[in-house]
Image (cartoon, rainbow, N blue to C red; front, side, top):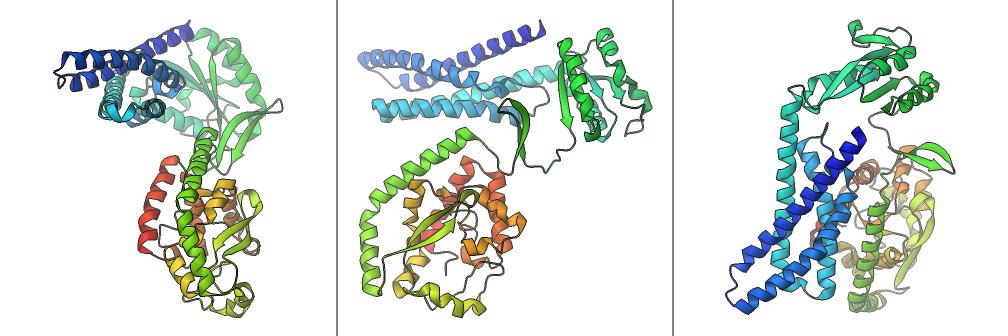
Amino acid sequence: MIKENLQLLKRLHLVSDLTLTAVAFFSSFLAFFIFASDPNEVAILCQRNCYLVAIILPIWLFFLAKSPQAYSYRMKAFHYIAIQVLKPILKASGVLIAYLTVTGNLMEIRNQVILFIVLDAIFMDLFRRFIQSMLQFFRVRGRNLKSFLIVGTGKQACEFFDLAKSNSHWGISVLGLLSENGDCPHNGKSSLVIGNLSDLPRILNRNPVDEVYISLPMSSFHKVENLVAQCQVQGITAHVAADFIKANAPTFSANDLFGTPVLSFSAVPRRLDLMLIKRIVDIVVSSVMLLLLSPVFMIIAMAIKLDSKGPIFYRWKVVGHNRKEFNGYKFRSMVAAADGLKVQLLSKNEMKGVVFKIKNDPRITPVGKFLRKYSLDELPQLYNVFKGDMSLVGPRPPLQTEIDGFADWQRRKLSVKPGITCLWQVSGRNRINDFDEWVKLDLEYIDRWSLWLDLKILARTIPAVITGKGAS
């Protein structure tokens, strides 16, 4: 019955959101309607906007319905709720803009669309703030509470109890703690213990419990299955806290691996939908740039041939995602025999670590110096991006000889697809002379990755390239 009521409330909330979306749209329409004095123009505007709202509402319904976090308030901060509702709005707005672009109507009503999106986000945010404030008002007064039972008396169990107690606006009431072996709670408050593990069925039968929080040490994990089963029999949600997963642990998720339930740990945040968008952007941008820059490619090719003997392109073996080798391409910026001369210059290496870097490298040609200053030598890597070996943004691809000298922690940079630019590129490039610092920037990118971060790095790369900042 409780679940049915929750589903009904969520549906009503969704209807409210769609109503607010319609209000936001017609508000944006009225803002421009008042400037239309011609009756014929008014009639056309009304017809067009009625048609558009019939397109908009199903799009918004689809994305809002697929965003359950936008309807979850308990134990959530205001800014978290705002972000969760903004995500489906932005996705739906992207579809709407794409539709208007294809139909050729975007430029005509772009200002109204922008105003609509802004108003919609504001209306939904204010509505959620109102609901959150009302819920908190009732919860601190003992209404709209969820009753929790904590199984375990360890540090994690007691921390959860303290959090629930100190955040009364969460609306959580803790019935008590169940001890595994009669142990005293980690916080020393033995009065909190209301029984042992064997008492769970009896306590669930005699007390109103909404959810059970299970926090047992790894050595007692064999008992968890039975505890969860006892909760399931009575239709009570059970949360299992895995104390072996630390705060700095890699990304993990529950999956089904060939019929076996598993916890999957990854050193890299995995969002397949966002990774797909990243790949689409790579393909579109690289193909467009290869086409638009083809005259520049021809000019650079002619300059290289006139400057020194040797091929136009420099092709070398680099290592990509999960140690997969591929051929990297650059415009040749050094003399043809540069690789053979490298041995004679190793003693002059100015980079601390496995990477070889020196300022004023004698192997660099006059044209090559210009190309390197403005990163023009790297333009052929757009072909690697188009093929899928690289991405526009990602850690720089290393050589196999460099990987052999990597420390274990440095190898994590191979867990993502390499890129043309990254945090290292926009943080001074060759001014960084310690390979450890270089890799730390790569790992920071991996841990913080998002489409927004990629966009910021690309935006910072443009002025860095134009000014030649940090290049040598």
